[in-house]
Image 1 (spheres, rainbow over the protein chains, first blue to last red):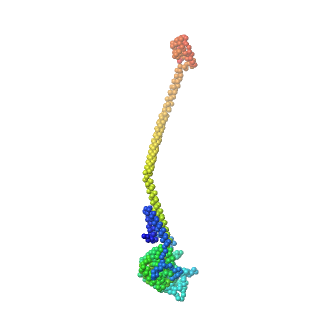
Image 2 (image 1 turned 180 degrees about the vertical axis):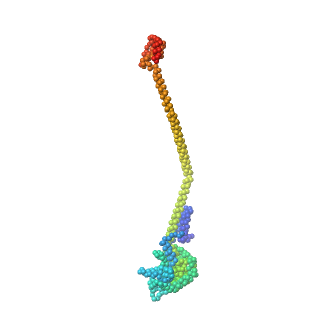
Length: 76
Length: 472
């Protein structure tokens, strides 16, 4: 079963945890390597997520919602 | 004790305090010190009793008004000249603008945006009355203001769908945040219809409880245009909304009642987007920073482990039997060396002692010798005179004895011509009786001997003998 993709914030928080753990300098070598790899993966994923990040803008109507893009050059 | 500020720092702080506290105010006062230099800017002070407020009305702000800036009433007889051109000393006026600090003079002053001769407009009166009433009810209390969520994922925007406000909002937000779902609730933002529709939208957002934050925005416009946002119904709907409301009523002048009531009031619609989401490059930077920290922490960690490994292997080497042997031999060498050094030192000490003793001994011996010599000298000194006396007497006696001895030399008479007779054995003949004819005879002379044989013996008379004897 595929796990749900972690959000940017979750990844960032995990990355911060990993850095903090490594900076404490108490984890054994194997664990440190694992943490390091995981951290790098999170950083890369964070960047990917940021590159892909787009707002989903929808206009709410009586019927429901529809994609919205603002009209250009028109003033209220 | 607080830090010492530079003039620039304190001026900047005063400026921030003044500008932050009085972003837009209405002030009534009597015009005085009015000056209109050729620059076109108008300088004057507003006075009340002894108090003065310095004002500057820049040329760019001196617009002819097509409507009453206070009431919004459009003048049917055409635009009216700006008060900046008509005002006179002693006239009572109402000016609107922002307070700022003029650092070069160390003064605070008002930058006038618009002015109106005395006679408060209806709009302002109503506005102030409503503001007071709602303030009294607690609608503006800062204590009830809810924090605006940072980087929200679900946002409701209440605005006109075809307005500049939503366009600005979307444009600014496109480079920000982590990808949010934005739902636009379309409403008219001006006209009679606007307040009830805005209220309805706020209620719907609250009812659906989907959004993390409700954004209420409207682009810039005249006082009239913004009238809906001073509506009491709108203010109360904002107040009732269970979701934090962020207002961005984009106009240059005063805060509207909606601004006062909202949980947070941004200056413009663009500003609301800036407040909601951080720019994406900030996130990128954050991720970059974390990645760098990760790499540093990891290399520190591995570096530390490597160091520990090195320490451990060094400790192991130190504990090896070989190393122990080496250390013990080192200790042995050291002990021997110390022993040698100690012995050497003792030797030096002893020889020093001996030398000292020798020195002392030598000194003592010489001293004694000298003492003895001196004693001897002294004794000798006493002897000399004695010797002199004794010696003289002895010498004389010796001389005499020598003389007598010489007289007794048996050969002496030979040198005077006497001879000495000896028998054949060499015995001196003292009497004729000691020889007989036929016996050998030797006559000793001063320069040799004559050898012969006795042929006769003739004893002599007495006289002859006595004479011989007396001649000795």
